Amino acid sequence: MYRVSALLLPFLPVAAHAQATAEPMPELGSGLGQMLFGLAVVIAILFATLWAIKRLSAPRGGSVPLNVLGATAVGPRERVVLVELAGKVLVLGVTQSSVQTLHVLDADQLPAAAPQTPAGRDFSAWLRQSVERRKHGS
Image (cartoon, rainbow, N blue to C red):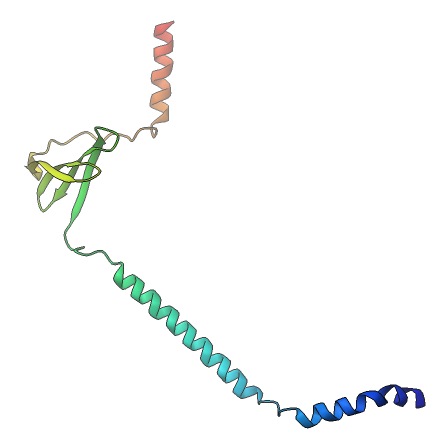
């Protein structure tokens, strides 16, 4: 027993000094309250920022119905685009630096095209044609 007290004797002044200068421990409730208040502020700032981003990135003039009927490339960066707008069909020439109206039609003047499957979608028809070409070519 004497040896244990002799080993602790050098640390008694340090322990006494630490106890005299120690600040009282804050209550758990006040620390938890501050943490929850800070968390609520951060979440409120997050929601306010998301609302502002949504508000500022909304498209302008969304009440006008605009339908792109089709487009075809006529050059590396040039296209001809059909756009339906308010009962009219606009034929637009679109380049890298400008958009020009080439022609204006009424929507009922546009000839109804047969629905076509997009390229690469009708694999069975393509395969059938390839087999027929091979049979007739050989």
